[in-house]
Image (tube, rainbow, N blue to C red; front, side):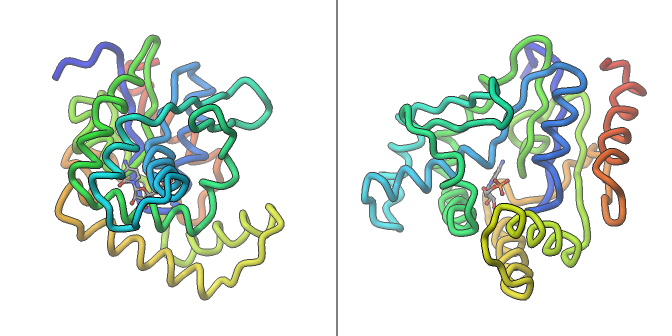
Length: 226
Ligand code: C5P
């Protein structure tokens, strides 16, 4: 598969900081951004809105094919619109994350989202954030990063994020949910969470956001991408 533009993939487990790092890297180099996790969250959320049974695979495939999604990054915070409705906050809950992980394990749902994800590759380049960006969606990406952090640190980051948003959260429950989601994402048969053989492993435990962004930027510079 020849890529129309250069692509950087940033994969990794939940709460590894991929979303934040990908957004900041894309801003710094002026490239487009694909938040692929949001698409899985939208499929699960769209299923609830259409009152589908949780195990209705065909129904969720239809949501994946037909949903109209807009990522609006014009304002101070990015907005995600599903069929014209702002659902940003509603798809960011732990429950929506668990729903996403459930529908993401179904191969036909993944297939239904493949072309949509590839269509984000547009000039001058794309930073793609997810679980299988470097392994399945953009196997020919020019730079692949696999971002990790210890499970403890990820639970603490998530806890802090939720408290800042004013949601109550128990650290113990979050640790458990993160461990469950990691296990489901890394043991599923299709596109399991694992680093591409040619990915750069980047462990962000104990590193600041700025330090991780700088590391990704220097990896791209070494490759002459910017
Ligand atoms: O990254 P985020 O937490 O938003 O992803 C939500 C869920 O969507 C993940 O737990 C995973 O199951 C699924 N996902 C996936 N493949 C991707 C991105 C997300 O399976 N590329």
